[in-house]
Length: 72
Image (cartoon, rainbow, N blue to C red; front, side):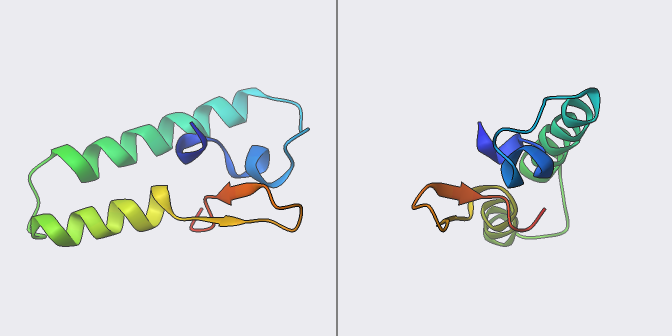
């Protein structure tokens, strides 16, 4: 899903997929898992807002295509 795609692949959809993209995707999945599942001093709603901002925020690009990941 685009929430976990590397910033390079989001910026340039035709970009060749390289090992660095996989590593970045892994980091995004790990970050989402940590923020969503592990105990934290943040209250539940603050964590949900942060996860949504980091991973779910999207907008329409110049071509009208749905884009996301601007926080990356």
